[in-house]
Amino acid sequence: MLDIPVLISGGGPVGLTASLLLSQHGVPSLLVERHPGTALTPKARGINARTMELFRQCGIEAAVRAAGLAEGGTGLIVWTETLTGREIERRVPGRATAQSLAMTPVKNCLCAQDDLEPVIRRFAEAAGPGELRFNTEMTSFTQTADGIVGVLADRTTGEETRFRARYLIAAEGAQSKVRRALGVAMAGKEKVYDSVNILFQANLTQWVKDRPAALYFVEQEGLRATFLTINGTDRWGFLIHSPSKYGWQPEDFTPEFCVELIQEGIGAADIPVKVLGVSPWQASAIVADRYRVGNVFLAGDAAHEMPPTGGFGLNTGVQDVHNLAWKIAAVLRGRADESLLDSYHGERQPLGTIITQNSLANAMSMGRTERQAGVLPRREFLNEQGLIFGANYESTAVVPDGTPPAALDDAVTQYVPSARPGSRAPHVWLRRGDEEISSIDLFGPQFVLMAGAKGEAWRRAAQGVAISWPPLVTHVIGKDSEISDPDGNWHSAYGIEPEGAVLVRPDGYVAWRSQTSVSNPESTLRGVFDRLLGKVPAMA
Image (cartoon, rainbow, N blue to C red):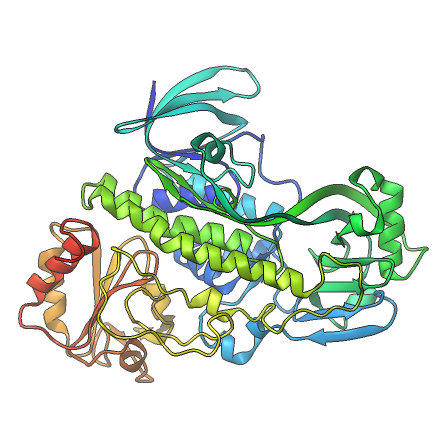
């Protein structure tokens, strides 16, 4: 029998990222994927800045950017009657404004899923101790008191292997067999509208080179669709909105009919078009009522299915496993109590619900269920900085410090950087020797304690605590320290005095903060870890 700490079912971006993260935490895992290789079609394309921060911490940001569209290739969103015809409107997404870009050391990236997955796979296979097996699926599983037992099948040979795992991560997509076997209910609205994705080749350079955009919306009475940029020249997606409103059924989308529609959207009947694939689908906005069932965890589309309006699906899923991986690692090492794993649902499910609802609101504001043309989206569309960076976790894996969250007029579009416990640790430019770095660059597979310029006592305390607790790295941030703060912004950004300290979790969220000094730093830190990792009740 195969015995592994973690089995990952599903080899898309979410499962592959889970494998990579667990390996970086030193946790052996086995990923199984029923298909023989990575994705063959673009599917998701947009990677938001928070996910790119995660990839930066994993050491794969540069490789992802190299696989995607060159920077500057998607600066706009354009509405037009046809690509060759009248332009209705163009916008610069709020995510691309100078104010938004100042919140992070990275930029968004457009990298189609069939280009992204091989990158993550390459790094996951190289990382170890995780293992990846494609053309293999989990055919059955049963929960036991101390884990999961089940059967894996090789789809080529039919050979079966029994396995035992401590935990199972289900990252199988919207049709997750694991979720259905567990009887997990999905709340929300199913099958809200229908769509057809057409992948095609055609050289559209002459109509897009002077207005590079991620999306070109075609608004006609007889056709509502979107050109989806993939490589910005000759590889595109064409998304037909609500074809049923025009009386079209999935079987109507023959290659010849697809070419006709694409040429209509371009406004040029003589341009050569080669159809590469056609995928009918229905958009739903549903979220699992439980992300954890015993020793099984749902992640990505298995936990939340949302319309693509806003580009949150892939990003939310990858960030799910970023939240989960360090918690599983802490429990498997014996550093944390099993109860820590409940915080995965407590933190990610409410956020997944909010993001799914807003993705649906974007779609409805654009008239996705109607035939009416020229319906522009609500102002929140592609301006959701609050959803991307502004999550405020409230769970047993966070120790509150009594400070209130930032007052916002709109939690969807507005983000105010804060090191209040439960928030994403803010980006501040620092220096390490002669190198300019972001505070984000200090985070990785370990807890990070950042002390103020006069916080050397916290470093000594951390050295004592690290012997018996999870991996812990300490930095004293100040002009005369290893990490300097040349602009003098770090203390105010993190809301502490020079004698204070902030503890950041491996997923880059603030776990605890002391705004100034305490009488016994080591005892304080021990108590903090006891509480964070479930060694004592949260209310103790």
